[in-house]
Image 1 (cartoon, rainbow, N blue to C red):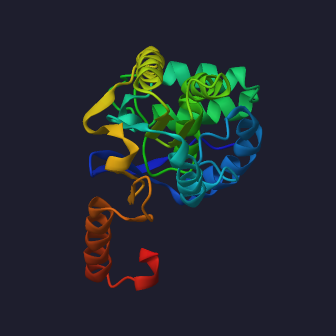
Image 2 (image 1 turned 30 degrees about the vertical axis):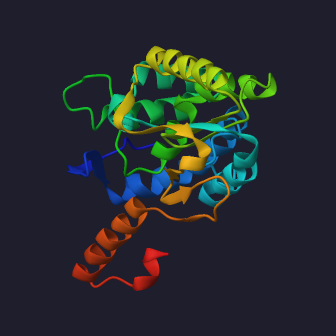
Length: 247
């Protein structure tokens, strides 16, 4: 198979984007489907952005159902998620998942080509493999939080890429879960965003995936979600895009 080929790199909203050659783009699209079939069984269902795990709607439904049982919530974003991922960790994870040599080589090239300075860190946000590898990267955290839920130390845990929500009955349970979360992501070379976070009572309400969630209230768009839609609308207008792409 021909090697992957890059045509260009640029940054958008702090994320590295890649323009692949047309043959590489087609190859990545084809290979991603096969890789997904191999990796998906190793990714817990609490990671909801993976195909078949519920998506945005599924994540929101899960939280809405369980908010009445929880008095306390913690919502976090991981800072610089894509740019902080360690290549050696990803390569060890795909090997442990049983991925074949051919696909492991493709993933190694996918990570290394945009890494012009040979840092061994980060990946692009514009390739088909990125959401899948982003799901796999935090599976140690997913499994640990799922065990806490089964042990009834947590009401619920859900993750959508790097957005995380913990629901608990007591402050003590929430503190224990947050300590475990810090421990797991530190092992992976990550840290939580200092500003994009909320810890408090579910009756206060919190933002998640563009919506405002509050115990005893209906789901509604968040202020940040509305702002992002306005930004997208302006960009589409400037490019003469179809308004249906906003949905």
